[in-house]
Length: 305
Image (tube, rainbow, N blue to C red):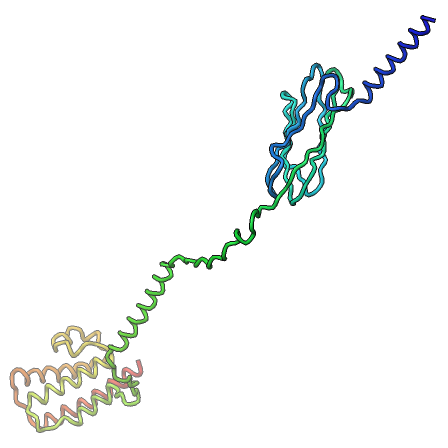
């Protein structure tokens, strides 16, 4: 009977120990404790709340951290695990006013040699109050709307300089135009009225009268013939003396006999101009008639060449 009593007692004690070790999840188990705390129990919307969960009296055991399950408007901003201190830190923000419960946080305890879960501990939920950022009398915090702040635009010095230069240039041009002298209207040349060298020479010979003295007569006669040659074949006979014409006679495109007679007339005219040689009226008429023939034959010769 005594043997049966001890056997029955042993079964009851062992069963009790197994049941207790497998089902217990209190805040303290085998001298292991867990504690959760908030840095404040009242905040305003958007303030950061610090939740600290700390496990104590751990010996040859390992902590298995889990997630903190929350719902809107509660938001977990950051989680930091401090294994050496057996702590886990949460930064929590709540986005609405009212009373809220931060749910309990569960930590598993296992042997250090393997990951077999021995038991778990869970903290109690924590209450926190979220108030509005407007406190006291709402009317006392409402301030009048400020007047619009005037916008100060930077002075565009570069643009001002450009426009100033442009205006200065326009004014300068207008001033110059107002002071400009008025020129006579341009009259286009009437080429129909321009005489040919031949026509001009003939006309001047017709006007060469006998009332002139010998010197003036032969000065004009020599000038008429020289001008005719110069304007016809572009030889500067007006600037050349009779001696220079003789030296450069090969450059004058005239028949040799006609050229010799022309040079003879120029030499006789020089004698009358400078030596005051006297001539007769008949000689004048003869020289004018020869000059007309000279003009005609020279013109024909130059037109054919």
